[in-house]
Length: 122
Length: 312
Image (cartoon, rainbow over the protein chains, first blue to last red):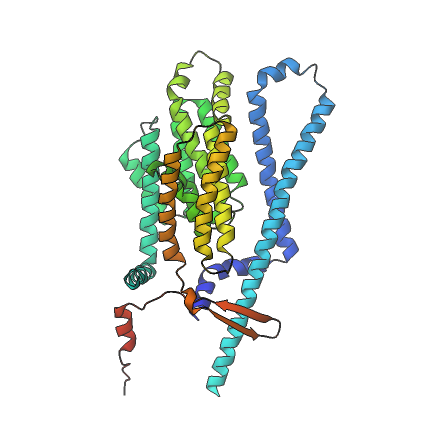
């Protein structure tokens, strides 16, 4: 009972919040959030890279193959965001499954407790 | 041993009785120590480098979520570096922002590790961090510990180049920015620490989850070994000089701290291990139950043994 009360007060709250979602909704929401974070990080890193190499870029901008550079940038962006989206998919799928299992164990314990209470009343 | 277990139980009871107050005091102490360390190391902005400001922010943090201590510490570091030079502040700010964006999503509960890692460096016990967080954290705690290592080395680096940056007043902003970034990217000692701490933490965290007897002790010993090997290998690959005596001594201290942490977090009696098997509607359970080492303190025993008064 102590463990059940502790679960209700601590990790149970989060588990209930997670399990209010369908698995696909929960995971997708977090993958999208991670993709947005990764996009901001990518542009921040890009900005720092441009500022670091500003002299070289200004010299070479006219001789640069802009289409090829654009293609490289898009590939780098897809790899960067894709990696974070994949990590998020794995992490949040695991978290959802763990929350669901802990809630299931908690419900089983509640059922056993309720049966014990019923048998005492009889 | 019984006496130690009794002390542990008393601490546990005391903590559970005054949890709210103790947590607030601990948050205050952590924030205070971190801000004093930052001010002591940097202290370029005189307005921030004052005890009343540190006390006010620490008091504020004592009842705010623990994650905000990291935020305020980052703000202090960025403001100090801003007072030194705008370029340093931009690099520091960008790095903290990237940390928050990329790591915070995965392990928000481990934020104390970001603060405790630089504190452990300042106290001369950095090798304790991967061992302790391997024992009490999750495998993803390596992100927080690595961020702490990076933050520490960034502050150290900015501190070491402060005079040079101030002397570069005639250079362009881009040149100063490039100088700061180059120094951070070529900080090989930081890379050695990040790699070795990550390896040690992952090994400790993986092994301690096994159910074989004394898995926590094996995890601790393996973590120490992996840490030492990783430091030696990565430093020789990157050409960094390493103080072997310091490494050995640091890891011995880390092992001792790990033993204390293990005693408080996971103290079991393997001689009384039981194996039970049962089933419910959906599963068969094959359970290995290892009893915890516990002793009921005398006060609690007496309270429990008091006869219950029944009113007529």
